[in-house]
Amino acid sequence: MAEESNRGQRKPYGSVSRVAMRNEFRNLRLKQLDRALEPFREAGKNPRPQKGWLRAIREALGISASEVARTLKTSRQLPVQLEKAEAEDRITLKSLRAAAIALGCDLVYALVPKTNTLEALVEDRARAQIKKHALGVEHSMALEDQAVGRVDEAVELETKRQLTKRGLR
Image 1 (cartoon, rainbow, N blue to C red):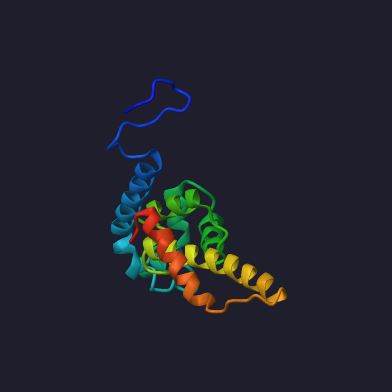
Image 2 (tube, rainbow, N blue to C red; image 1 turned 120 degrees about the vertical axis):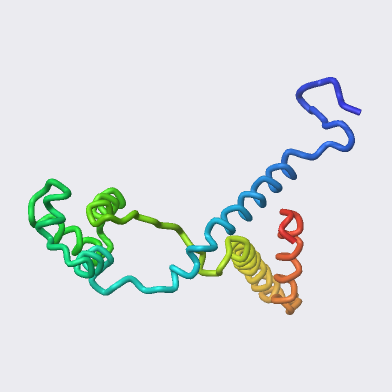
């Protein structure tokens, strides 16, 4: 049954805790983002042209830098400066978007996990944190001649426990 006081407010039997709801929402969001990132995974495997997408597309379309400048309503040097900035990873998204529009393109970007999915990234991060902690404990215990060994086994068990607690396994 629920308690009367608001301070130590208890939930009625059968209700879901706030932490469980937060984890469920986070996991749902994680899965939604993983699905949304699916089309970008393959694109992330293709390298950017050496001189950047702006120049590669402009040249492939046969458009001069002056023509892009007219579309952008800027100086003739700006498109060349933007191409150079993109090739050197210094361009802003705002500038890249404007140049893309001037070339008749859309700017599409995403952050794609190197581990293939966000869920795998969460698991890898959890495992790394747990291993760091376990190695610290193991080192301290070794100094006291109490080391247990089998750190990798303990890390995998704790990782599985943490992910289960979060609702990912």
